[in-house]
Length: 347
Image (cartoon, rainbow, N blue to C red; front, top):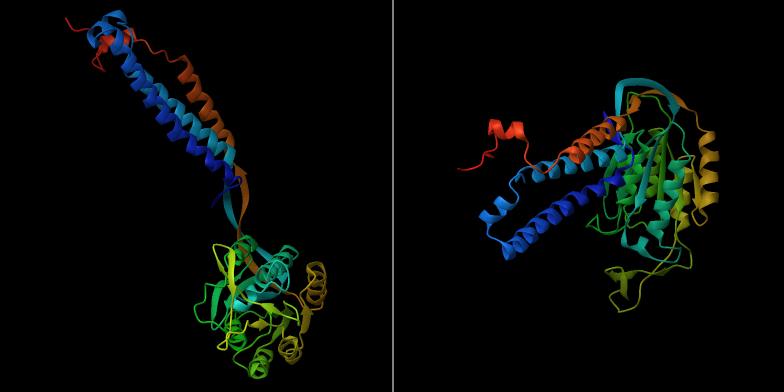
């Protein structure tokens, strides 16, 4: 298993085609200028020891050295062995509402971005818990199965948007049903579901499915994102608001936070409803609630003993640059005698 510590330096590879382009442009210019003074045959007589292939060899050495330096800067690390470690925690699934109503800007910057901010901050404060991710609107879709890879969780979280689920609505019931399939039936870990939404449910009967979740041993914490005063749903094009969503009568739709639905779900599963307006308070309340939940020991396999290998590429770059500097562009006598590159003078 390997990883690149500083991937941003891969952009340095773009310098390689640029150097190639400059080299060929220079050679064309050199040839064009040379023709103004003498014929190719005369130029060969004027510079008999000038090699035609060595500049290309020097260029190849330089490009390989540049590539080696980039890999050194990226800092390639290799995991030498796989270890199975014991960890204690709970299994947490985040179900994030991605319906169009989550684009309302009654809470800055908008409901969906605020939801992602909340989940990201919660994940950053977790210790050894496992996390999963669900996106839902008119239907629910799994995004990330239960894992200890927090980096992957945050990557999938950032990809959430209101266009990823074609059927619109807020299917809280379906999201809870899908969450019940995320947990490992064989393990006895504590099960927690964080349902982040504005509470505008369009399916109803959430109490029944919440009761099913409670029977499956799942504690549901609901986080309400939005304001009870509400706000319009913007229609954007290229990030610019063009209009606002209207109903069949041509009136602007005002979407409001519905805390009652979320409170009922939390109460049914012995969970808790949390107001999602202030991020720091939400995170603090979530962490306090998780402290009261029994932690279970489970096994997690991970690569350990990652070792940096940048020094090998740095050394290779130094060697290549050494040869590039000391390789002269004039013909080499012993190579000319071997005639490997057809460099003998024509008689």
